[in-house]
Length: 248
Length: 51
Image (cartoon, rainbow over all chains, first blue to last red; front, side, top):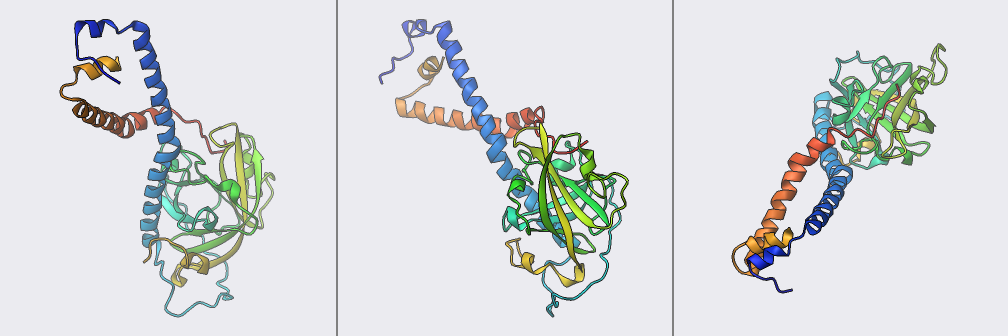
């Protein structure tokens, strides 16, 4: 292609339609760039920041090293210790879900405000129970955008472990089922989901996120049941010790 | 519009291409680090809580 040097005749060829056309093409490219950034690039960057944050936090919570003398896996540590409720927006736990990747860890902070807690990881519904407590430990996180902590929630399979680490210890939940509900279905947060007023006897975990992806039309709910507990001094459960979680 | 941008740039073709590459990089950087995060604060299509 041969371009003419700047000259009055060259400039005369610029038409209004041509400029509008080029502006529209530019706007289209801009929109695609924004979508690529929002749905892919930014999630990668923010997700990895959230992971680094959680790994640093796990060191504050306790040693990630297994103890010098191995713990007998059949040891019964008794009733799980329940941590006190933390202040709004303050992180109090980490969540590990090996199904989401062998380096998956996110912080859990108190509150489910989209403008703060949910931008840093997973949020705990205020008023629902704490990890290891009889009732419902309910949390929420984004499925797309803002690091998308629950991006792969629909991939959970029966038997998958969900680990929660607090300053007191490690709580193991086993994924049981998925459910799809309307955004108004607060009954999934009840101590016994869908059964308001019924006294709980089981310890469960409830994860909520949006459904379908990129939409706010419905919610996807994942339930898990409590399996086991071990104090912080015993180090992480065996499955986690083998994961790629940044060492120490 | 873009044709006139090309014609106002100085130097031989490869210099102009170089200038344009730098310009595109600057525009992309401003988008990624300033414009997109700002735009994103207006978009909240992904409510994740039941309420």
